[in-house]
Image (cartoon, rainbow, N blue to C red):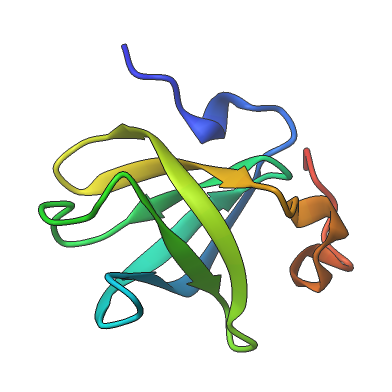
Length: 100
């Protein structure tokens, strides 16, 4: 059984557009952010093939950026851990109640 962000009681379920950016910002994959917590996120995409183990994730209309490491992956989903900056300090979660 894979560890999942969604099992974290502090994760917030949502649907936001995201972009996985890597290769010196020369490569971009679109994704959907399905869950978000202070420590990481759950992403869904058509295929995780070609996504590196570390990348920049940009979330939402403002394009807020997070540096990420992959915690787990399937063919269509990725669980990531945020490095450094935590989502609780993010304007992205202002007004959202974690753990709802």
